[in-house]
Length: 459
Image 1: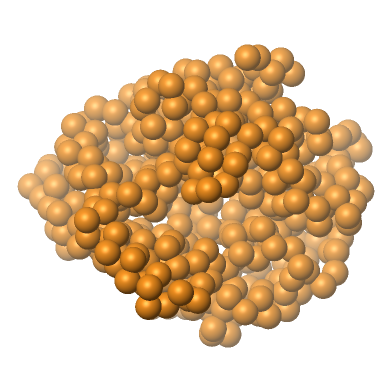
Image 2 (image 1 turned 180 degrees about the vertical axis):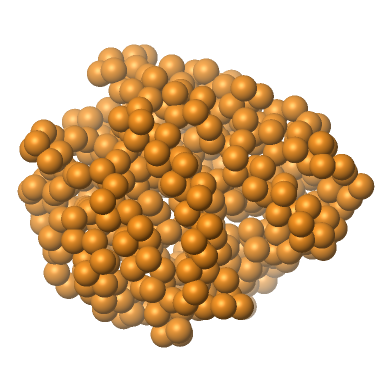
């Protein structure tokens, strides 16, 4: 198994390893922009289940888990030269809200399968709990139907997370191709007072169940604030996330300005050095758990997005930082490959409507429905000029509440109705649209990554 020694990860034979790969977003933690649904995963699943019934909904979602990642996907990633996949999971696979603290053993079935597929090809896995009971941050990717991270308010949710991690750590304690555990993705504790003590408690519990595996710990405020750590735990990597401002859906040119802030290669490096200051000061390994631009379909703009990525990869190389690019597979916004076929034929117009309304935070330019949202922004600015809600301020909060929660939740019945009347073969075809052999490859991105991983930066 891997272990930390100073600034490096080492194998059992003390050979250095720099983990470089992708995140498997949208698989065991589904996200709206990745598979095309609106709002949050639990609300979506409930809406689809009301249309299909429990058994047929379970059939569809299990088929999707099976098709989304197979031997062919593992071969592709290993063939690119990647040696790591960060695997986001939702706690719902392992525990039910109706029966808290009772571990669902069947939840390990697909996770075991993919970890073993990757390990057979010499690729490590980092298990990332992306959605915790009560939601550890304010957004959809923690399966949050609101804007409140209740995880930090209630000890009950924290107790359940510790119990779950004890079970996961016990299950994988002897697995050599699990690089380690990323127990809390992007925590968003508004007070900053709960997350540090919780980490102290969690580390002790996981170490008791599995003393060998590396811990990958995110900083507070979406893995940007490391002041919450009161000690440097042994055998631990402190994980930063490093999204470039110009790479967002609302990003400007590159080099250029995005919402009044300049972004160029020099600024990318300054930002990375600021975000990784804690790791460098503590002499611990550098690993970027998430980063990557959003693509637009505009060749000129996407050329700039590839340059952002190329510059970031060269910066990470110079600093000997590992990384996990977000994300491997989706419906066309960011993935290395994207689904096609029956799923896009059926849901394509709905996905286009979401884009028109800006219903997904990750794909929103923050300009959609400006005639509706714009006056509300103006009202908030005029009436509450000092309002700066956690984590990103008034404009983002308003957009979250109106576009990404209200409008997104209003779209749930429409999405679910697109499943009505489908037979089992049709449901299987929808799920199988995410199988690699049916996906479209973003070849310039694949080529860029292959060049970087081979040591040739390319231009």
